[in-house]
Image (cartoon, rainbow, N blue to C red):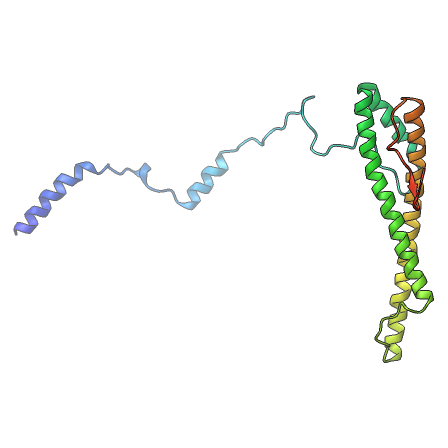
Length: 200
């Protein structure tokens, strides 16, 4: 009986401290939360573009040399002239040099790939292209011949693409170098054209 009385007193003391719960304090069900989120229609974020806004994908200052299709050297020379009209000589030379170094690396890569292709072709002619394991059946021999034929066709295609790219780059280099020297009187000692190990 004494314990019951003590519990009653304790309940009376604690009860005022607990906040009274109302219907609004009850946790919302998932359905109610979903309903509320549908009601709150947020406007999509707006992107405001201005003159100071940097584009996400910057176009190169000078276009790349086209490896196929129509020759675009005139477009390259115009881009250099446009850039020079709003920049000083040193800035223009720096941009042209970056363009040159990129395409010089592409030229060297195309020449090196063609050297490897030509070496493979010589190996085939000498009969060393087949692997050490000889075909055991007629079917296996036929499959090896088909693989070899596909490989030769792909090599020839890549060789033609590399040769066209190399020719286009060398043409663009010659015309660009001439314009830099005659029109802008730039220092072009670094502007060398190296095709098949011959630099000019």
